[in-house]
Length: 296
Image 1 (spheres, one colour):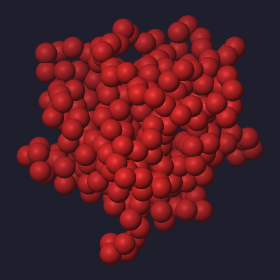
Image 2: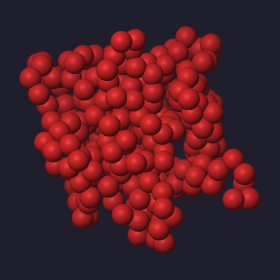
Image 3: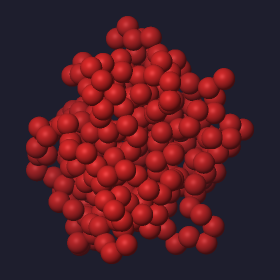
């Protein structure tokens, strides 16, 4: 059974040390348009291009969504592989997808805040944050807290963090969405997670991509691996006695595929693949913002 597969986002978010970053395979990322520097409310905390907001390009709906591209140099995340055998770090796949999803949401009239729009973790690195080219425990905690703080500064109505899964067998694939059930707004967390999971499944079906629906995983799950969700700084619970900031809005982590499956990695690297997933994120967010009553 694969219900206890190590969750890529959780493992890298919660484990301390990551490998040094290889050269980015996406040097030609689109340049960010004029942005509102959300992080300017905390001068000097964020690198240029991190904690920024993009105005809607469609009729303004009066809503803000924080999109979080998992990882960022020097935090590479997990490692994937393409159909030609090329290794690729997770950080170089999450950012292009988030930028494409931001365009989609903005066209729907939604203001989009980005925890990072560049290949960097976001918060300026300080003494003790990096050792031998990799984030330390202290550095990782500070970066996750900075992303939660960015979402709060932006006044986000929802937070969607984009990660990819991995496994030691390349034929394992599927998609799942994680959420924290223990927050005061845990029911909204679950509703956001279900909305995103359903939209991703519908997107895959429409694209003719056969993918295993691994479901929605809450921090109250009996699955031993998923219980780590309770400790996700970004989505909620912080360790006992911690003074790290908590996000103040419903949130979910999507893991739409396994990048250790070469076919899945090739899919998300393609323009069509990113379009399918970005549109699915937009559909899921929009359905959530409409509220539990579908007539709204």
